[in-house]
Structure formats: structure tokens, C-alpha cells
Image (tube, rainbow over all chains, first blue to last red):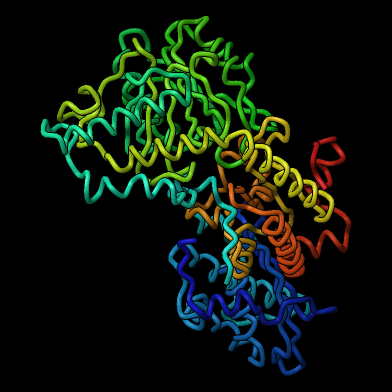
Length: 154
Length: 408
């Protein structure tokens, strides 16, 4: 496959961190859609001080989708809710030593999944998180061009 | 790590006999077939012999076989060359929704030149209906192009019936036989094929080498103008080694065709049966009955194909997928969508195409690995989590309830 993944991406795809569910999670968010081929679900366990004690994910998607979910959960663990907002798609990509251009949307989806879980936490607790906007449920629509036509000849 | 190559529809490993036949034409018999001294004439003789041999494989005359750079050029030449030469007779072309892009994009290019193209739909098995085909023929239809066998799902079309229907209406019939040539029995006379595209590297021959069969009397405009090679129909100094290699590969394939076909069919059916028996939420894509002997194509629910390919590659298994993520495109394969698969399960497709060296052990190792890979990816899938919690949301379970065959 002509997919040039970094070693870090392959590591997080092959040995993903934090796969699973959290029962009675403080916040849970699911973004993406199966039609486009990516769905990410993030569970967060947030303590009374607003610190993310645990993060888990499940992802339907390509290698980059799994790797970015894994890295995003690693990056938010142990952080405060405010600090977690700084885990942007750029931060996830940098931590993975980059992504092929066609896979950048996976990192956006990972950011969005974290935001969706935080939004759920805020709603459950009736609080406002400064700088957090309601996530769009279907990030794929505004990022997938569906116009790249570059399939293999065979 | 041992590589288990199960992507023979993509390309094949060249046979040593083919390489041996080609080698002298690089360094010893390197003459230009257009030259009149003996070195040139020997090359010319080799090309003539190869042409005659390849023509014999499909029941054609040597003068009806033209060498090209591969299947895509042959498709381009057949369709563009015929359409442009016959525009006075009409501007309508019929093809199918499941053709290779070499045909689909060629037709799209002709639409920009003012031709009209009907893209026939296919049924759930990937078959073009002969009735639909007849109904699509208009008074201004000049050409039909329907592939012999599909490169993704292996479905073999009713070529003789389609060609006969075309001829009844005076329509010329082309078939892209890239996946079938050397693998399936083909006779252009018996089947009524007017033009046929084939490629050498799908049958253990060299890459960059193809042919176009053009029935005597069928008029084409040239794509490549220049010298008088190919009787003035296609310029470019002949790829002598490639031509010799193509003929050698086809001779070997023809001699062994029935035996190889039989053994691949047994391995293919073993693979299909094992997957249906041992892997839940799987669907065989394409017809089981009218199918290339080396093609296994499944959709697996709740997962995306690229992850499957990467994990299998880590075990040395080379396969392909119709998923968007593996193609550089963002939409899944047009073939899988044309047979009616929802995007969700088209993304989770896997194609294994067996070769002449594939063993039962290879197939079993690949399926064992596939089982482990799918279990792993499903354990990470939110769709599978939802299905396990609610028992709902399985597209393949719905298909099964509706009586769709070959699903687990």
C-alpha cells in the first residue's frame, strides 16, 4: 500500500492505547459516520477536580483513524478539562510525527471526538466549559471532498 | 518474513520461462524489427511468431492482433478509436457500471466529445442483464463495451449472449478481457467478440505489454500516429522482448489452463466456504456460480478495510480492498456500490486473488490471520459495540433475513 505512515502511527495502530469502554463515564461522545468510513467514540472519566483520570476509545476506520484516537486519549489523560481543549488535531498529528495529507481528517475527527465527550460531560453536569463549542455530529461532511479520484489500476 | 501473495488480479509474478524467453531480446537479438538486415529481421520474425501464437489463443487471425502498452491502452484505443472512426453512424455507446476505469474514464472522455454513453446497471451478483442490454440499444448505437470478467468481484458476464444481441442490432462488441485472458476459455469467433483487450502481466508475463484484437473490417482511428509499425495502426518501435514474453506467458497459460483452473476453483471454494462458516457478519461479493476461479471477495461488517489490510500485511499477507481509504479516494469501490452494497459494508471489503503457486496452506494461513484481524478490529469498533449491546444495526443480518445468498 502506498500509504506512508510514520512509525508512531504504525505503533499506535498496531498497539492502540486505551481501547475500550468506561462504564458510567463522565462524558461520552461519538463523531463521524459509517458512510464515510470513520466513526470515533471517546469515553472520559473526569474527577471532581475536573481532571481526566481515564480515557478510552472505540473507532471504526482506517489505520490513521485508530492511531489518532489512540494518541488523542493518551494526550488528554491526566489533564484538566481546560488543558484537554488544547489537544487539537495539530497536537495529535505532531505527536504522531505527521499524517499523509489524505488522512489529516482523521486527526480532526479525533479532536472532535474529545470535544464531543467533554460536551457530554458539561451537559450532564450543567456546566459551561470556556472555549468549547457544541461539536458537529458529522465532521465528515465538511472535510471529505469526495472528489479525489485516484484509484489503482488493476 | 514469508510473503503470501494473494493479489494476483493486481499483478502476477513473472514466470522464469517467460523471463528466459525475453532475455535474449535485450542484449543479443536487440534489432529493430523495421530494419532490413538479419538482426532486424530476426526481431521481426519473433514478433510475427508471437502475434500468430497469441491470435491462436483466442481463435483470431494474426492480422487481427495489435500490440499495445497494456490493457488500459487497448481499452482506450478500442473505444476512442472506434467511436471517432464511426461517428457518422451514430454517437451512442453502451457499457456497464462495473467496468474498469480504463473503460469508464474513456467513455467519460468521449462524452466530452459529444458522444452519449449508457452505463448499464448490474444485479446483486454484478451481472449485466441481456434484456437490459437489448433495451438500451438505440438506432444510433455504434458500440458496446462489456468486460469479460470483473477485476474486483470476479463476476463473468454472458459475453456470447451480449455480443449476439449487439450484432442483431448492428452494434460492434468490445470486451475488456484483462482478467480473463489466459484464465478462461475465450474464442472470438464462437463468442462473437469484435474487439478484445488483454494484458500480459495478469498471466505471469511482463508489465507494460498488452494487445487489442480487432476483427477484420472493424475500423478504428489511430491513437498513436508515427511510423508504420503494426501496419500503420500504432506507431512506436515494437517492445520485442515484451511481445515475446507475452506470447510465452499465454502459451504456458493455455497449455495449463484447465488444470490450473480446476485447482484454483477448489482452493477458491475452500476459502469461500471457510469464511462463510467461520467468520460471522461476512458477505460474498459477486456471483459464486459465474466467477473467476481465482477470485474471493468479501465484505466484513463493523470494520474498515485499510486496517484489515495493514494487519494482514504485518503477517506477510498481500491482499487488497475496495475501501475508500486504500484507494486514495474517499468513496468505496464503484463496483461494490453498483452491486448495491451500502457504503458501510463496502468500506469493509477484502479481495484475495489466488495464483498458480498458491497452496492450501497459504489460503488457510490467510484465513486464520483474517479471523484474528477481524476479531481485533471488531473489538475496537463502536459499531460492533452497539450491535453487541442492542442486537440491532447489522446490515448483513438484514440482508440474510431478506434471503440474500452467501452471507454469514
